[in-house]
Image (cartoon, rainbow, N blue to C red; front, side):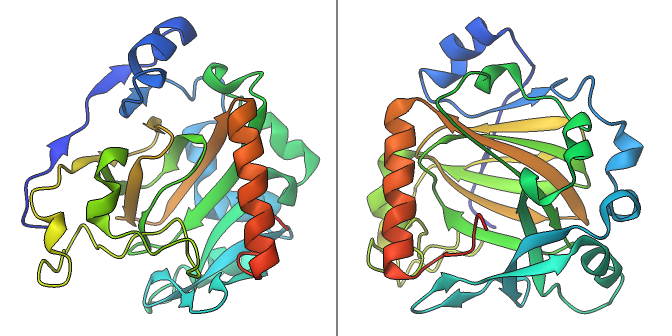
Amino acid sequence: MDRGVEELVRVPAPSPEAFRRNYLRPRRPVVLTGLTEGWRSPGDWTPTRLAEDYGTARVIAAVLAGGTLFDEPERGVVFRHVTLGEFVQALSRPDAATHYVMAPTWDFPATFEHAYRLPAYCRGAAHLRAKVWLGKRGTVTPLHRDVPHNLHVHLCGRKRWLLIPPNESRRVYSRGILSGMPNFAEVDPERPDLARHPRFRDVPVFGATLGPGETLFIPHGWWHHARSLDDVVSMNFWYGGRIVELVSLASTAFKRWRGIRRNEWA
């Protein structure tokens, strides 16, 4: 990406009160360190070790094309179930990944709950959903936004993030509510085509490359794009209050009614 990117600030994880005051309420993204204390040890979060412990688990995975999310015109993102062991075994192949694991924690055995701790910032939230992510080097999630706040905890490998503020939504060319990917944008922030998307010129872009033990806070509505620089493992926690819960339920119902992303939380 040729355009300038403003690097996000890194701070030690603050108290819940300070986090709410400095980042949650102003909806300011930030990279937090120290949030994984008390979790499974770093060496136990590698894909190989997870396959040893949970290899028989059938987990939900998104289908990829050329290393990026496959976009079927009518159904949007396509999901399939794969066994974790088979997915990790495929990471050693030289070709691009065909799947990206984005599995709800309930896809794993009950013992998995001892591997991590729920971050204090989202405890007691009316809306709370958690996923485990495993991706091959080169896997890309295109620019999109979510209804809830997002704490994305990196556990193995590095991932490069690009973020764009919510007030720039018109300039990233949202795909639209009737598309197969209604919360995604047309713009590729790594290689923007300004002939097709001239409004994207001079849009502010924030970025950060995260490694093990670092957490990215993505506030509600912020557009974000991610590229795996290594084989990666991470967890995320989407959360919010009652309004977020109602909007998320409505969004899920709308997607299912339209026949898109049916199996995302299966």
